[in-house]
Amino acid sequence: MKHKLEIQEAENEAKSVIERLNITSLPICPFRIARERGIIVEPKDSDRPGVSGFFIKVGNVFGIQYATHIKNEGFIRFTIAHELGHYFLPEHPEYLFQGRDGIHESRSGFISDEFYEKQADYFAKELLMPQDFFLAALRESGVGFPAITSLASKCKTSITATAIRFAQFAEDPVAVIMSNSNRINWCFMSSALASVKGLRWPRKDSLLPPNTATASFNRDQNNVLSAKYIEAWTRLDYWFEDCSQIEMKEDVVGLGHYGKTLTVLFTNETIDTEDDDEYLEIGDEKRGWKWH
Ligand SMILES: [Zn+2]
Image 1 (cartoon, rainbow, N blue to C red):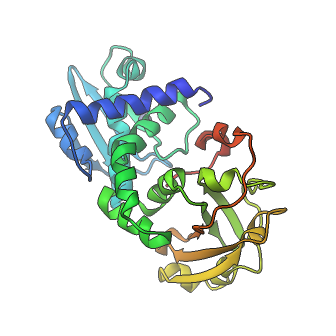
Image 2: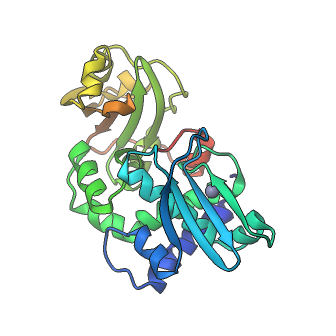
């Protein structure tokens, strides 16, 4: 999705739903929102690859089903929030059903390039982790990986989705990096880090820097599977070429059967930044990375 306006529309609609339903605290419960709108929610066995949920219309009645192969509670809630996006966002029901009864198959979690899927994902992100509530919780959540687990339990969202939102709003220089084996899958940075002089975004599937705790951690897959957590030190220039030699904390955690590792780099030091704000133009979709 290239257009900021459509992203903004999705986020504004999520905010408006929260206001209309008078929700004043975390966690936002998508089951409750569905129930209050008379939408039936139920699990469904599905072997369709990549399909996370279904949005169903029968006459004037709407239903949501989520795929039972999803074992992550946070992602189940995200999937339901995505289907609610199809319900609440202008033109979605009309586009998906063309005035007839039907079943829409969703691929939620920022894996689809399809316009309506992406807009529903942006709606879901804002619905479950609304900016104002999330910022207030973030200020009380501390630093590093423990802050992310605290926020995930407050929002009832997955660790990875929460980590990305954390990077988006953290005021200090922060990067969250997903990796497996010796490769970086994706990286999100706070504005304070993304605007550091000379910093370049790591390319998708680039090699993990070998002299880091994350690289050592990933050499033993048992660390990942047993959800081991370590705290280490690193340097910014190990991770991002041409950067200053700034010391950063490096929290590393294995994500169990998901088979991947989450790394959080952070410091509370101020780092020199560039004047231009080009980094602000880089949205999730341009990076093309999966989100859950
Ligand atoms: Zn969908």
